[in-house]
Image (tube, rainbow, N blue to C red):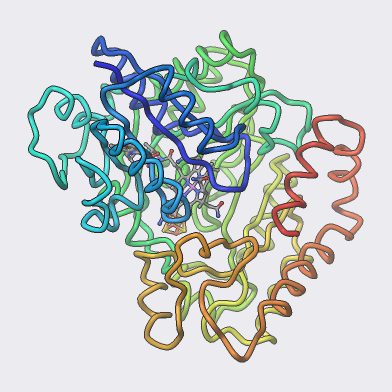
Length: 436
Ligand code: B12
Ligand code: SF4
């Protein structure tokens, strides 16, 4: 069989490849089928997809869909159906709203497709919505990186910029799911991956890193896992294995402020950890407790970040603003709090109640929420109408946070590192343009 796997990229280019799709590609290829990944990231989308489908002529057109790429994804599905292709759709939005996709695709996969994709090709399932069982993560192959435009991705990859913007690297995933209950994120992850965290084996991740070093000459990787350090024992084993095998790799990961202690940070640093991405979200404890259900204690944030910095680990902190019921004063508190931290990087997005989240349900009760999924764009748009704070003012406050944060002398070294590197200029431009 011939299968085309399509990743419809919306407007923001990043250096993060669609590894979930590349993983499915590797599984299909291992079973002896012909597969291509059609990733629109570096191309004009519809024209590129059409050209690739015409030359490859697949039996199955398989499309990834998240909520923001919904319009693009259904256009691709409808086109393929007109051309009498069998269409399979999957990804976060297919998981959240499977019924709404029935007229656009033959098969709609809810959740993880790693095992079920082969069963569909082999004709073992009836058309319609399929809810597969959770796959065994220890049997997964290395994603088919060779089917992606890895050189282009690596030129834009920037999670370790605060260490050195010239590093070559890519992003990988070692686990699925998150046990926490933040209102702007859950229950989406639970619906996709189930409750709690499932993890790949330490050995398979080490093999993947070795493969990426050999094939792509990388110096760094970033773990896009939702909360990397929630598996303390796994992390301990992973670090010890990196050290024992003397694997030279710098790395970064997503974590939570309450999942870090000094001993763990020191071990991770020794094993190459240099950057942590941490969701702080707000400088107001009321917002964290009542609106975001974040479950963290704000007073512990500064000391943990300062400790990390002393050890040699840089922090990027995520902040949001403009959530339902948030006051102007609370936003100013966030700006002040962010600027005061010993973090190297910060981002400020507009609080967005993504479809399927607890925050969405809460917002819908009091405000008019947009029905066009492409408007859930947390860099530039507000997904609901709030007469007490205009979008224009909110966007100014968003920029104010970034200006106050990056003009502090403790961030000058970070900015200077970018100015002395061609790749640094490129990634800095990308980062700034997201907020313009
Ligand atoms: C890394 C990442 C990215 C990367 C890479 C994207 C990717 N999908 O690989 C980048 C930076 C590009 C990215 C961008 C965005 N992301 Co993102 N991202 C993630 C993250 C943290 C990990 C993705 C991952 O690799 N997961 C592990 C793999 C195994 O899962 P997977 O890719 O979903 O694939 C599995 C299934 O979904 C399914 N599947 C996937 N594709 C297909 C296709 C077919 C045909 C089938 C049958 C099945 C199938 O099978 C796969 C294997 O089991 C997730 C959170 C998460 N934990 O998943 C958010 C997440 C997917 N992102 C999200 C969002 C909102 C975005 C953005 C819209 C943000 C923005 N405003 O820019 C953009 C838009 C992307 C685009 N289309 O252009 C949301 C989606 C929510 C929603 N309602 O749709 C998530 C769930 C985060 C969250 N908690 O809210 N993202
Ligand atoms: S925001 Fe982070 S910690 Fe909270 S539920 Fe989502 S992945 Fe977990």
